[in-house]
Image (cartoon, rainbow, N blue to C red; front, side, top):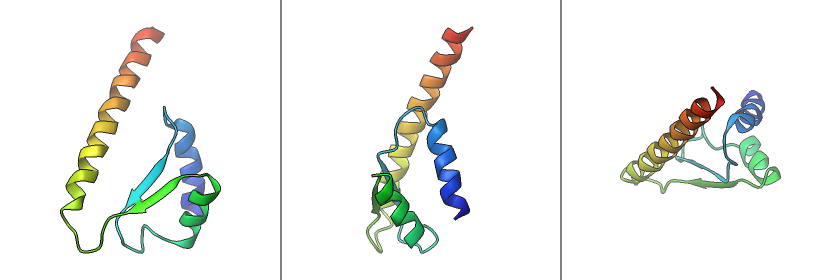
Length: 82
């Protein structure tokens, strides 16, 4: 349950709403608590296709894109808050 509390804290810090969580098929990422949390918070939960290692490059590309957008937003916020 500790990770769910952390997810709530993380969501407060994000500069945008979390629309979905994408994970691989490992049991360390998928469990009943996380699925219930996603349903309750209306977050789309998807997972990669089993035995398709090539899917990771698409997830990594999206993550880099989102990280870059977040960094730009943070720099703009810092620039205008001075």
